[in-house]
Image (cartoon, rainbow, N blue to C red; front, side, top):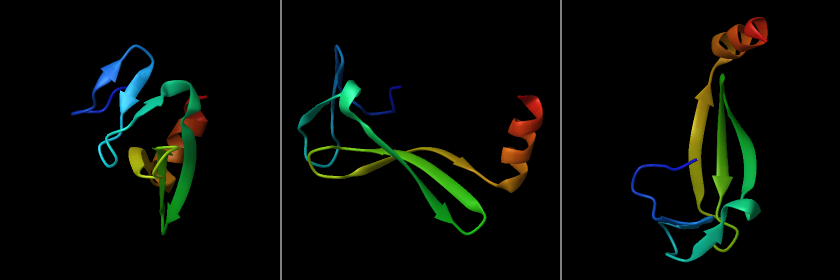
Amino acid sequence: MILPGMTVQGNMMECDACRRFMSTKSLQFGIKEDGEYQVTYFACPMCGHKFQILTTNGELRRMQAEYQ
């Protein structure tokens, strides 16, 4: 997974906030509930900066469940 503006070298990528490199194998993933929405993110293990990777609402999650 590469987000726009990210610097990637092998399995390392640079955090936009602290500018340190993190291993793609040590990413910390999480889900934040925000009303009807669920925001999936990963966080830099050094500074905790969160990178949003997916936002879903109830309808989209229902459609995903039907597809599976």
